[in-house]
Length: 446
Figure 1 (cartoon, rainbow, N blue to C red):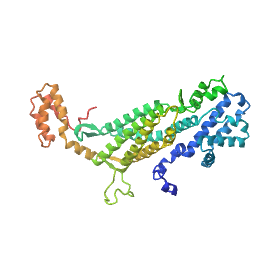
Figure 2: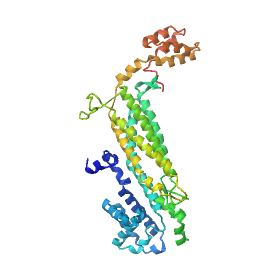
Figure 3: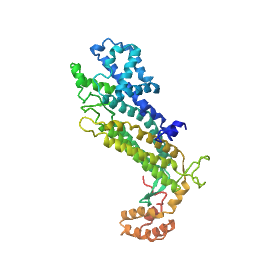
Figure 4: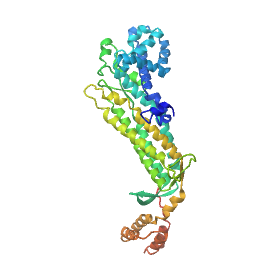
């Protein structure tokens, strides 16, 4: 751990810096500046491609040279923008001046006034931030989420035939199968990922109050609405229209809510696996160098699932605030969205930490079939549901009440108890044989 990590205020950039490092390309101050420069450059290129009359002389063969301004941008270049900002006291204006300085270096400053032409800051911010979220989701979050989902799916298949005692209200219930319980989490996550795939990443691009006033007054003959739609679409985003000065953030809120639902499912998974480990249904692969407790040498704690649960909770708290605050703004705009929007990377950072923990924890699980079988063997009372259902089918008098009386005697119910009960029933031998086949190990449904 370097000194920077030791001095970090947030554990996302300190203790967990190695895990969250990839997100710096999307959510650091350097990344935000680079995304802003990218949007400004692409906007200038789009104006050249109309072409505006005053840009007709620009050599379009230099397009890739322009793109290299952001493609090759370094943290040192971003620091130059921050130096300009000390003078302007405006972050987006500093980006504009930085690009104009680069235009001077490239010998194309004569077209410099078309950098940020007709725009307001939020045209840049409300395209840069959604674009950074989109690319972080695609390149960091989704691959990691798919890794975790893949392990869950693998266990669902691998353990699909392993019977297991279910617990409802913490009490023994009709048996299930280990793989099926993993399958439940698999399909829940898959459904939320399906819904996530349907969401678009919104962007605002329309001038000072959303009406492209400046564009229209300068070039009334151009269809600026179509231009805006096409330009935002070229970035892989969907333009919101009409808007005020800022994006209304409704679709972004939907994205945050969707991620929060996925996180909630993963919290549910983490708690269940933690509980199964405490029940000894699972053991954990041991790393001989790791310490489970500073006082108790024997302990192998389920820390990966605890770590995941904690970080998913922090992520959800942040996502809740983002989704509830961002769509609210006084009149055409207030500044509260600006400072809040700078934190969009934090819930994803805690999500990445959690997914890494889950990936590690799930990979350490060892199924303890012996403990699972013993638990089933201790709970023959759970076949009462099966017996009373078959008796109902046979119109046997008061089957539910009869089984209730048997299973609530306060005495242990075992194989022998159930066998004696079956033999005392006034039903055909064929039905008795059918009942004998029902065991906690076989009564697992579909």
